[in-house]
Image 1 (cartoon, one colour):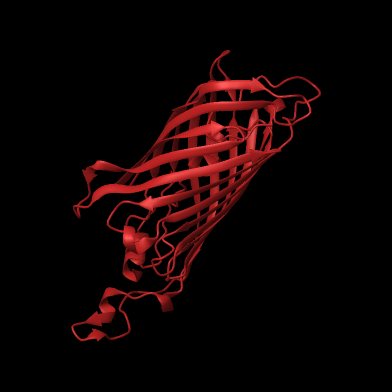
Image 2 (image 1 turned 60 degrees about the vertical axis):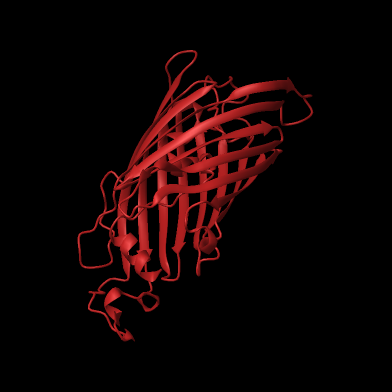
Length: 336
C-alpha cells in the first residue's frame, strides 16, 4: 500500500474524484462558477476505501456568486486531501472566474478560468520503499533522496459550458501548466486532465406551489448525464441518471470502461454508485455510496460521500430587473 501511494504520486498521479461531481461544480469545471445566478455555498466530504487501512479523505468548501451587471461569476474553493497511511496531504486554494454569454433565446455559453495554489506534504516515517526489503525481510533505510517533505506550486485550469433549459455540454482542461509535484529528486510532473460532460433534464411533471413557500415548483424530472475524463495513461467514464421527485432526489450511476483493459490486464469496471438527497428552504443534502465491483471490493469498503449546498436568496438583480439568464439544468436539484 505504501509503495503504491508513492509510485502513484510520482508517476501518474490522478486527481481527487467526486462521485457527486455536479455537487462539486467548481472542482469539475471552472465554467460552472456562478451558474446558480445567485450566491452559493457548498461543502463536500469523501471517505474512500474506509476498510483498507487508512482511508483517503477529502474535504472541500466553496463559495461562488453571480454578478448579473457584469455577466460574470466569481468563486473561491479550499480543498484538503489526505491519502492513506503515508500521511500524504494536499491543501489547495483556488480562485475562479466565468463570463456568461447569452447567444440567443435558447443557448448560453460560459468560458471559465481557475488559478490554484497547492501545498503538499508527506511523512516519510510512514512510508516504506522497495529497497527497504531484501530476501530476509525488512532491513530499514533507503537510498531514495528524501530531500523534500513539502512542495508548493501554482496550477491553472480552464473550461467551457454551453447550455439551454434542457441540455448542457461542457469540457474542462486541468493542470494546463503541468506543475512539478514530485517529492523525490526527479522531474515528475502532474499530467493534464481533460474532461467532457453532458446531459439533459427531462421533465415528467411540474406544478407551481403557493406563493407562501420559497420553493416555487414541485418538480418531477429525469436527468441522464455523462462524464468522461482522461489523465496521463488513464481514463474514466461516469454515466447515470438522477430522478427528482421534489424535494427528494435519487440516482444510480456506473463508473468504469469495461471494454478497456490496462497494461496489468485489469478490466476497468470500478463502481456502482447509489445516491439519495433532499432539498428544502434553499438547502440541499446528498449522500452517495460507491459499491466497488472490481477486484478491490472486499478490501476497500467502497466510498462514502456527502454534499451540503445552500443558495442565498434570489439573484442580485432582484428588485431591479429579472436576470436574462436561465439556470443550468444540471442534476444539482436545489430550487428557490
